[in-house]
Image (tube, rainbow, N blue to C red):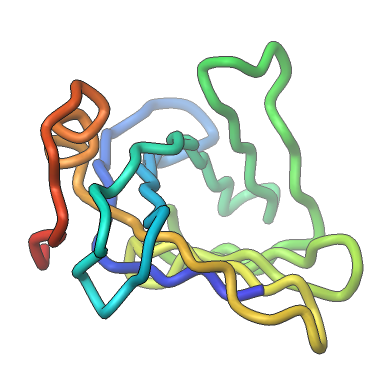
Length: 136
């Protein structure tokens, strides 16, 4: 699977062994998708915060609904905006210049989801009808 990263998420500074956190906001198109346009209003589907450790070469990630963070090990971490980790089944998840993407491994196909700025995600989440995402 390949996530289609349309724009960077919110970046916030953090202290300690982890230098930065990046929160990625996702939307899905319930209808037909053509680039940044959707035949039906986009739907806010969730967000995930990632915290990369250069020192430990690992990435923690979580959502507000999860009690425990997910730990990805055996990662190649350059900084919070650039890292890559293996996933079960031979895939990878990575952040490249602050844009998240994932692949589920050979022959799994695309994962049609959009990555949007936090303000646009909140507009959609609060019920504003959006059929075309802004480039960011």
